[in-house]
Image 1: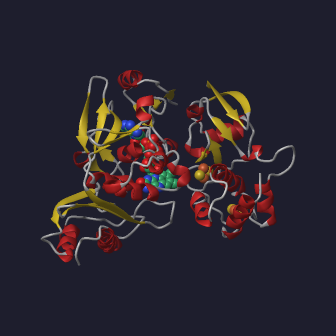
Image 2 (image 1 turned 180 degrees about the horizontal axis):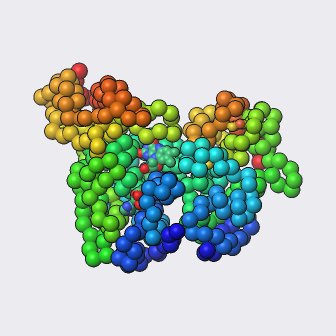
Image 3 (image 1 turned 90 degrees about the vertical axis):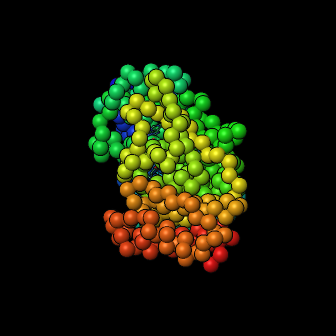
Length: 154
Length: 270
Ligand SMILES: Cc1cc2nc3c(=O)[nH]c(=O)nc-3n(C[C@H](O)[C@H](O)[C@H](O)COP(=O)(O)OP(=O)(O)OC[C@H]3O[C@@H](n4cnc5c(N)ncnc54)[C@H](O)[C@@H]3O)c2cc1C
Ligand code: FES
Ligand code: FES
């Protein structure tokens, strides 16, 4: 067991955990933030996407020990004061989710994109979302939702 | 269970390379973490090299473009250094996995993983790149044309670590073309890189067409026809069938993608 210090959704944490777990396991099993999902645990699906020091990454592809001092944002930080964000609302309005399993990852990739580029083109969106797989929606409603969210403010 | 090491200096890293004979380096971890999970290896220590400041640098020097071993593919693509003759490296970087993985995956990790289909490998070979390494006692330069020895095998010693990859300056154009099954989620079924210099000298390199990436140089577009170049290149590769593609499909794709590379390099007459 080793201690690791990191900030998640603005809150500082010191976590004692084994050296061989991933950031995804740390978030889910040690901080009980189960929004990031375990899909493939192999970098393929994007269900575990979080924003890591400002960049979207697969949290199953980061060791917890690498995250010393890191600033992490997860889906749990997206809604503010009990209200869903405009990005989340756009997903709801556009039926951009069915089973919802991919959605936390989708939203975090989209959030990272909009933070970096508030007015992305459709191509920018498709490019930024290429690591996130969805087996339900066929992607179109997701892209439309992000386009719509980019039209409004957070 | 391994010990996680996070040296802040190159000296500390060399110390760890000496004191832990069964150590694995983690750069982006996008190959290593999968290997750990699947039990392909059981190291005593995993050493993260991302806290060593020198390894995070990209520099233009008299020797050429130097890319530190902790530089991610995303950082490299955003650096603005991959113009002109380095274009193949940019096209290969954009083909490597997807934007999430590129935010972690490094160029040096792609090279050290030594998969024959790794996107940056053929591009690095045509650009005549070398790696610089350190060991507890010293270090060396290794040309990538001498680096790969088999699928996922290379000449690095267990206590040797790549610190940077260097691309000499070239006058000319380069390009990379890849065939894969799923955009953003697949190693190359075939990848082809080419560098055409101003004097008509052409170098080609092939990914996933043999046990290592294959470099075939010495073509001259001023004296050879396109058909001659294609035939000679196809004689130099030995693709096999595997989960990604059959041998026949790879042979066809290698020819097709070589034509696409030659088209991109324009001057190669038909
Ligand atoms: C879903 C998925 C899709 C992928 N798609 C592609 C693709 O399209 N194209 C492609 O080319 N690759 C692909 N990959 C493979 C991988 O992302 C790349 O090979 C990547 O560049 C590896 O870099 P890394 O920094 O993550 O390496 P790591 O995993 O950190 O390291 C890879 C290997 O090299 C060793 N190593 C790392 N750095 C050094 C060093 N400085 N000195 C000595 N040894 C070192 C490690 O010990 C390890 O054995 C994919 C991987 C996944 C999970
Ligand atoms: S769970 Fe991380 S990419 Fe699938
Ligand atoms: S909504 Fe079911 S996987 Fe995307």
